[in-house]
Image 1 (cartoon, rainbow, N blue to C red):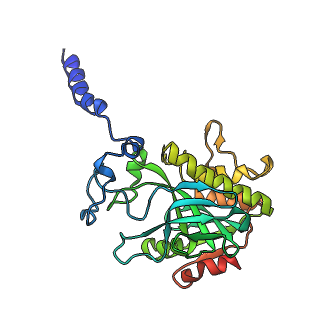
Image 2 (image 1 turned 30 degrees about the vertical axis):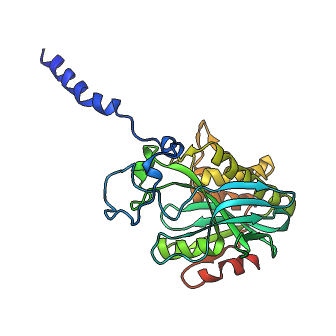
Image 3 (image 1 turned 90 degrees about the horizontal axis):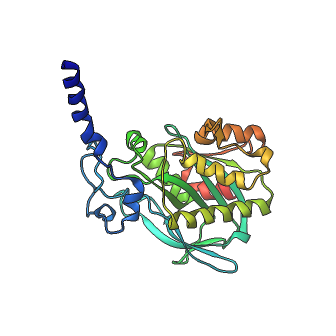
Amino acid sequence: MKNYALTFALLAALLPAANAQPDTALSQLLDASSPSLQTPAAPRPDRSAAWDASAPFSYHQKPAGIVSRGRSAVKVRNVRWGARPADGKSHRWETASVFPELLEKAYYGLRTAGTGHSFLVFVFKDGGFSNSSGETSRALTIGAEPYTRAPEGYVRSNDLRNRYPLVWNLTTLDNYADFNVNSYGSDVQLSPVNLPREEAIRLLNAALEKVEAAAAAPQTHVLYANNCTTSAVALLNSALPENLRIPLKRLLLTNPDAAFPRKAVARYTELGVLSAGTLLFNSSNYAAAEKLAAE
C-alpha cells in the first residue's frame, strides 16, 4: 500500500511539469502580436533573472530578409551597419543592395571566444555592397545565431529547451569586428575559402536564398543540430564537390566536425577548402577589418 501511495505522489508531482507547455522558439517568432516582440525604452536590469518569454529580443540581432531581386542586385533588409552604439541598444539597421557579380572573395569566419561561432564573409569590389543612405561597405557577414533575449543573452540551458528562434543576422564586417571585440572581448578570425569565383558567387547566392527561406519559414536554433556551424557548413558544402564536404551526420547523429566552430575550420583546412593563412582581428586592428579583408 505504501508503494502505491509513493507512486501516486511522484506522479502528482511530475504531471504539472509534463503538462506545462514552454514557449517554443517558433511560437514566439511566428506570433507577431506577442508582447515578446516589443522593445521597451530600457533593457531589463536583472541579468540573472529566470527565463522570461516576454523580455525583448536582444538589441544587436534582427531577422534579415530579402526585399527584392533585380537583374543585378539583391536588396536585403535589416543589415547592422556602422559603429557599435554607446548605449548598447540603438544599433543602425539598414536596407542594403548586394551585387553578386561584384563579389571578389569569400571567407569562413570564426569568433574565437568561448565555444566559438561560425559565419561567412563576402568581400566585394567597389560598389558591390551599399545601403539606402548611399554608404558603401566592402564586406558583408552572414551568419545564423540563436535569437536571444535581453538582457540575459545566450544561456545554454535555454537553448537545450529549444527556446531560441534561429535568426540570420547580417552586418558589415567592420561592424561585426567592432561589436565582437568590444562587446564580447573576442577575436575574429577569417580563413579564405578556396573557391573559383563562379563557385564563390554561387555560395553567396545560396546564403541569400537561405536568408529568404528563413524569413518565410522560421526555424528553431538547436544546440548541436541546427546551429551557427551546421548552417555555415551546409552552405559551404553546397558550393563544394562531394569529396570536399563535411558530412552533417555521422551514424545518424550530428557530426562534431559540422557542429563545432573550431572543428569545422580544422576539417575544412585539412581538406584544402580553407587556406591556412588567416586574418585575425583583435583590439589592436579591428577598425581595419574591411580594409584588410579586401586586400
